[in-house]
Length: 86
Image 1 (spheres, rainbow, N blue to C red):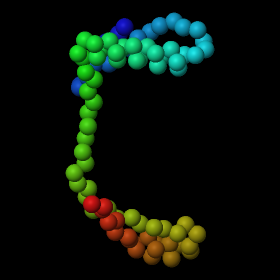
Image 2 (cartoon, one colour):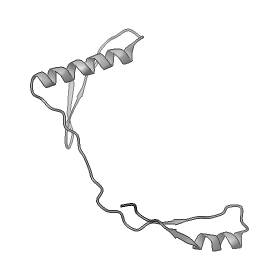
Image 3 (cartoon, one colour):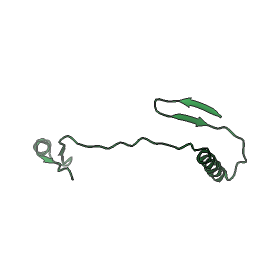
Image 4 (cartoon, rainbow, N blue to C red):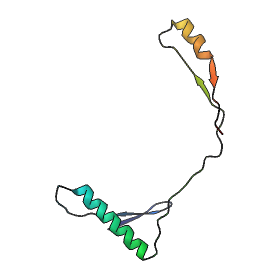
């Protein structure tokens, strides 16, 4: 097992030998076993949760790539304001 400290967690890596079939099932069983042992010892797994509380105004420009060049520029200047859902 290898440990690596990051800015807000500890990364654990395990290297192991196994047959070339049913690897996904083996990794699933190993992960469940490790999590069960953590729970037995009172070690909980945490994760970062972030809440986005605001969004700056956003404008969307629609261009028609098939329009002639003069009309394309005019269409690009028309913008549609984005309404934020509450």
